Length: 201
Image (cartoon, rainbow, N blue to C red; front, top):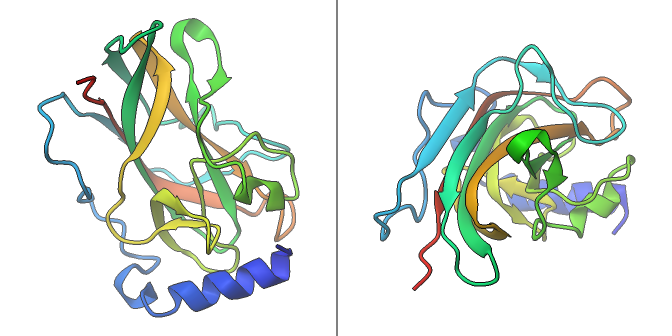
């Protein structure tokens, strides 16, 4: 889908609900969708500052990285386990891709299982995305990704299930300027990340 058509579809899909999730709506502690039904500990962190999204691919602002959280992932077989991830950002009108990385032990690895369809529409090459903001529409976006609009959900974020190595793992959000409005213009703030181990039985 071309950029112009994708933007038109996204605008049509979001115009009805933008009144309930405007640019000024980032709350001090957002509510979560589908967070009940598990006794597993929910780890979370936030970074409220505005930062410019990284150019040329995913990255962080050293003055305000992440946020990041550490989670103990149970082994569900083959030294792998599952996590549930919620994330949310407040974005300006230039499109930003948000990605989840495993940064355990100082290494950096894009977590597999994130969206790989909409990320192909970005001007810069990306391995995928947890979700993206919509070009031309500032607001509060979060998980999960809507493939129909190629944008994150509005309102309370919902969970995304990802398969990751078992054990104590550290995960971090990173950001990429999609380049739709020209380089160096995408920015995000009120960045939230919640992760908990998913049940293994």
